[in-house]
Length: 112
Image (cartoon, rainbow, N blue to C red; front, top):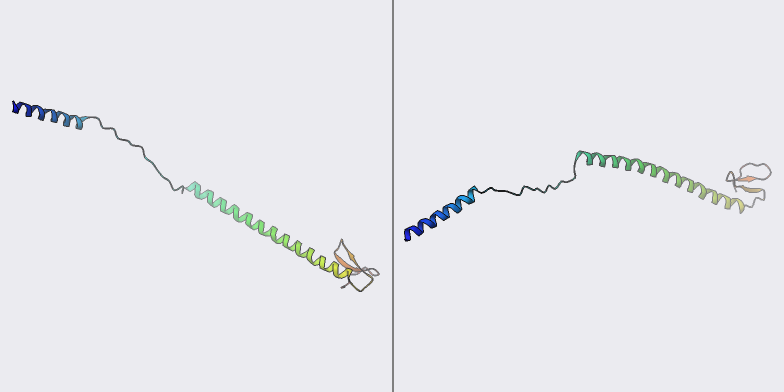
């Protein structure tokens, strides 16, 4: 009787083992791909953005230089107007259109 039980037990174990090896196996094949974002398109976009930034930077510098020159002109003209108006020369007057100090008699530029 004991032999029969051992054989049955052994047969059951073999059938379970055979089933485990013959059963269809399904594996999860999902992948997570992490890209650095470094592609030909992104490099081209970055190069174009940099080029545009450099162009606008150049334009901004030109505008700033122009504004600074205009400011310097106005500053010099303001000082010249003050000097002309405070001049001891009674014939000196300030011409706002030309931003110059002129002589009333001759119309020529004078240094106050």
